[in-house]
Every structure is written in structure tokens, then in C-alpha cells.
Image (cartoon, rainbow, N blue to C red; front, side):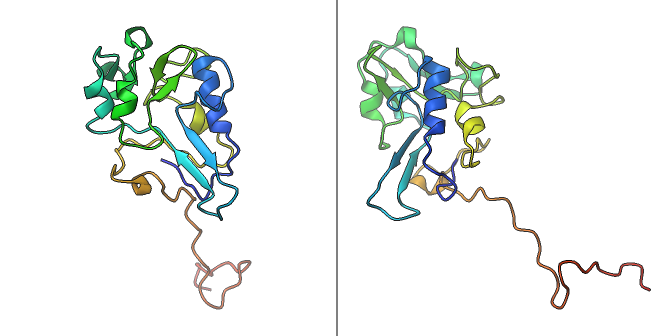
Length: 186
């Protein structure tokens, strides 16, 4: 999940993602995509396309080799095994989301997908659904969060949520912030 109101558009999440997976900082390889529109006003000036772990992933059902699969050993994360990928891009074409969540890598001629950092050769932390994700740990604004329950998939409303901490309760009328309530009764 993400909070578009907290995102500063710094691209730290994108660079961290490509670095831990591919060993290089790139804005075209990350599984998370942040796009900035200089001609649009806040809060619509930043668009975030986060990992989608779809309940019925079309990328999985369209893959002819089984490279794109649901990994039971990684908490049912939808992922792509590079060694099985033949580069047909069927998963990319089948994805109903824009931008597509399977990401084409033109250098390797393979498709990648967010694996919640389960397979990150350049990450010093344990990843996966029970571990840490590079995008979440790197975000300086706290705009990203991994949740256990699957968000609504119809549009971005299930993913773009308010992640701000709850506001503290207001003081009762007539009490100043410095005034401590008299709880002793004297």
C-alpha cells in the first residue's frame, strides 16, 4: 500500500528496488514505478504503481512455461523465475494494470515482477512477505507499507490509503495544553 499524500517523489523506492534486485540503480528496472507530472497539481502530480499480488493473476495463467507463478514456499507471492522465462512477454500483455506490473528487462530479455524482496542478491536484509522490502525500508517519508490482507483490486483506491499516524486527542474545552487534569480529586 502507499499514501500518495506522503510521497515526495524522490524515487528512492525505485532506485532501492533496482539496486537490491539487479545490482544497479535504474528507473526502468524497478518493480515499483513512480511518475512525476510537472503540469499537474498536488495531490495528483505523483502517480505510484506498486506491487500487485492479484488474487487471480492473469500474468500467471498466461505464462506458457510456468516462470510466472504463485510461490507457496514464499507465502504465495506471485513471482517470476528468470531461468524459466523465455522472454515472450505474455505476462506483460495479460496484465490489466497500467503501467503493467510485470516489468520487461530489455538487457536480459526477461520479465521481472515484485517478489516482495524474496530473491534479492544485493540486499543485506531478509526479504519476502515476513521480511523487509527495500522500497518500504528506504522510503524517507513512510509512504509505503506492506500489509497482510490483499487490498481491493478494482482500481487504486484499495492501494492508495492514508498512512499518517493518528492525531493525538484534543484537550477538553477550557484546558490549556500545559494544564494537567486533576485526577486526585483535591
